[in-house]
Amino acid sequence: MAKSNTELVALFLVLPSIFFYFCIMQVKDFDSSRELPVMEYFYTIQGEGFHSGRAAFFIRLAGCDVGCVWCDVKESWDPQLHPLVSIVTLVNLAKESNCGFVVITGGEPAMYNISSLTSALKAADIEIAIETSGCYTLQGAVDWYTFSPKKFKAPCEEAYSKANELKVVIAHPSDFEWAKTHAEKVSPTCKLYVQPEWSKQERFLSNVIDFVKENPSWRISLQTHKFMQIP
Ligand code: SF4
Figure 1 (cartoon, helix red, strand yellow):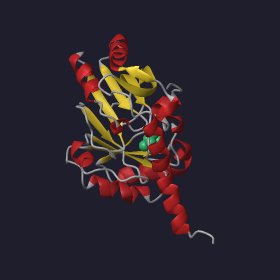
Figure 2 (cartoon, helix red, strand yellow; figure 1 turned 180 degrees about the horizontal axis):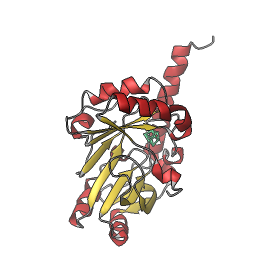
Figure 3 (cartoon, helix red, strand yellow; figure 1 turned 180 degrees about the vertical axis):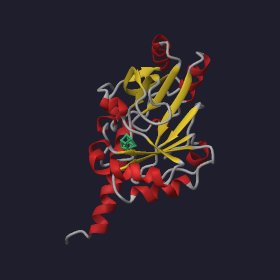
Figure 4 (cartoon, protein in one colour; figure 1 turned 45 degrees about the vertical axis):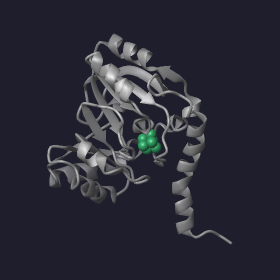
C-alpha cells in the first residue's frame, strides 16, 4: 500500500536520526576529554552574525543528526568519515592563529561533551563562540552562544536562556513567523538575526529587508565569507 504524505514526511524527518545513531555507535569509543571528531579547522574571518568581519579560528566538529535539507556542510554529518583530533592539537593551532577567538561549529558541536576543549581554550585566554542548533544541552563553557534553531529537530529549552544571538535561516516564507516565535523565548539582550539561506538568497533577500524594516529589533545576517570566497 502506498504511504500517505504524513508517513513519508515522518520517515524523512526520522531518517537522519537513524543514520546518526549508527554513525555515533561507531565512534562511541573516543574520549571527549582528550579528543573530538573534527571535519576541519581553519583560520578565517567569521562571515555571519554578530561577530561578522572578525578574525576567527574555526573548529568544525563532525557529526550532526538534525538533517536540514538545505545544509551546506552535509559532509559533516557522519563523524565516522573524519579523524579524531586531540584537544591539545586544537588548542595549539588556535593559539598559533594569534587571533584570540575560536568559533566551535559543526555539524552539531553540542552533541559532544566539549568541556575539556573549552576549558583548555579558556586556559589559553581564548574567547569562545559556539554555533549550535540548540538540540543538545551544552556541556562546556563558552563566551558567546549562537542559537540557530532548525525546523528539522526541536531545540531544548536551555538554548533560549543561553542564547546571546538568535540566528534564523530564512529558506521558506513561513520562516519569518517561525523566527518570531523563537524570539519571544530568548532573553531581552539576545541579538536577533535573519539570514537568507545562501541558495535562496535572490528569492528571499527583498523579503528579509522588508522584515527587518518592519521589525527593527532584528538585523540582517549575510554569509559574507561566501561573497569573499573564503572558508
Ligand atoms: S544543524 Fe547545521 S550541520 Fe546540521 S544539518 Fe542543519 S545546517 Fe547542517
